[in-house]
Image (cartoon, rainbow over all chains, first blue to last red; front, side):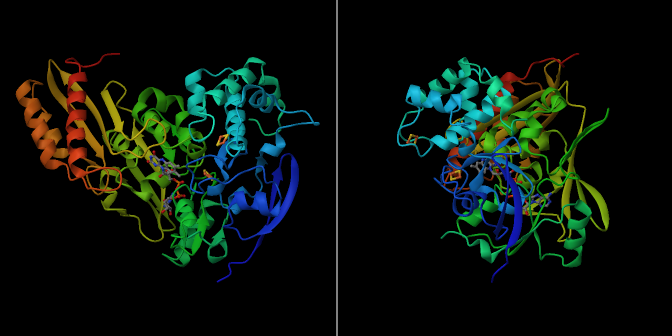
Length: 169
Length: 292
Ligand SMILES: Cc1cc2nc3c(=O)[nH]c(=O)nc-3n(C[C@H](O)[C@H](O)[C@H](O)COP(=O)(O)OP(=O)(O)OC[C@H]3O[C@@H](n4cnc5c(N)ncnc54)[C@H](O)[C@@H]3O)c2cc1C
Ligand code: FES
Ligand code: FES
């Protein structure tokens, strides 16, 4: 059976984009295959690992569990939307400086979860960082360097930055 | 095997009346999908049986929290993030706020809805024990109208409930009379973050001069569906909390619990943990009524 394709319009990293896709296609696959935004990764495909995390209308979601029709009209921010004017986002810079990324598979999801956290809570405690990133698994770093990266980014006051990103609430 | 998106139809009529009209036109043909954190996991595994899905995500008529002096009404499409952000829920229904914080990660809680948790009806659903001890009522809706039932009467068997084929869960009503009750909720799982419970126990209770004057107990994973523990309640109600009462209550719970063996745990382990949780609860109960 072929359920047909729909035209679906979304705002991706601030830009209006239209894709033609089956409505049950995962947002993750639309981002990677139709929009060639391959920064967003697939780990488990079932909501457990967070490597597919993106922000949708200012909330963190796992794009492997979002049928693209439910993203119709939404504003989506992916890891590609973090750097601006060729300059890394403070979180990206902090991950580089603190060794928060090794193989890099979890990194885009970690960055989006950390962006979400700092957008609402610019100076999180360690417990809040752990909770904010609890849905993102990393098999390389042992997490501590990731937490340190978030602390480092928060220390240089990303509040400003988070409010400037078009998708922060 | 991975699910094939071309094998499933998904439509988003955009309003609650439009969804209800579709359900009424061909009852049983359309499966609602809210946050998709159950159904999309099934889809990923190639196990999504529903061929025709209708989206409830983002329907304004389903995503709301309304507070009146008597009650708080939570739309079925409300996410667990929404629940955690509500100050009345945090203050008066703290067990529900805590349960909401357990439903997976931030990303999961941003999509997972209260309605999806209840209709999915897992015996381990985290919101269920809390709603049961708060005497929650459910409001169901169809083109035929609305009806209200006690949440305790909603589940009828393993993943079975009273919803008719053309009906949706519309809202959860919580009476605002528990602020002064003693409240307890504990979930035992494999790890702190993001683990489905092996057993959970919830309670709301009042005590007067050492005697249990009111008690509601509910558990997750001690029966094929989330349920009150009426027999164990009866063993406590009206009794002074002495070693004899506690012993009777423990034995009653052991007999009343009907846990299963599954991938997460064994029935024997669940029984033992349930009794330990009951002990903890009874130790924590303060002998006097709480005052303002
Ligand atoms: C990684 C991960 C971790 C999780 N951890 C937990 C956990 O710790 N505890 C827990 O309890 N759950 C957990 N869940 C399960 C899930 O997130 C919840 O059950 C969630 O509340 C389901 O809501 P939904 O809106 O996403 O449901 P959906 O998948 O959209 O729907 C679930 C079912 O409900 C039906 N439905 C939805 N809304 C309505 C309505 N208004 N009327 C009628 N039918 C309706 C659908 O038809 C479907 O049968 C987890 C899931 C994942 C992926
Ligand atoms: S790929 Fe989406 S959560 Fe793992
Ligand atoms: S850096 Fe390899 S999984 Fe995190």
